[in-house]
Length: 209
Image (cartoon, rainbow, N blue to C red):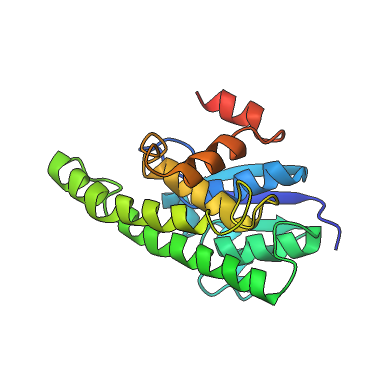
């Protein structure tokens, strides 16, 4: 499968920074991969009656929502499954055997668990509730992922080679404003330092500052 004519679709959340939530995982993944693609943002209020949603439903995506990646007219949605699928087609970003892929799938599921705690406070302004989230949830998952990143020699989950959950972890740390709280989590700090220097991502990260 040639990964040509690729388009990433995700919601345009005007009340938040443009990188917020699930679409950015695929945006980072596609940028890093070197695939030539277009990124189209869709207003949430317009999506329900949009041709895009109709196309998703026509292709049997019954949970027709975003993000979705379109390649040569065929849609792929759900974040982690799409990343796994594309990784297999590209011959990278996945494990070399069943054991490695199990480890990666476990890490991806843990990111989803962490995400569920963060999404509850995405609009929260009460400082006490935000602090409670940080103490009870953020620190918990920082500890878990610090241990995961210590399982192999190297900065990434599997060691020296980046895989799809690395994108998920980095972006959720960013969304949860945890990137400045890694002093006690050296494995995560090493990962972030390495990830943000990846050749295909450096210019993009610089543009966000």
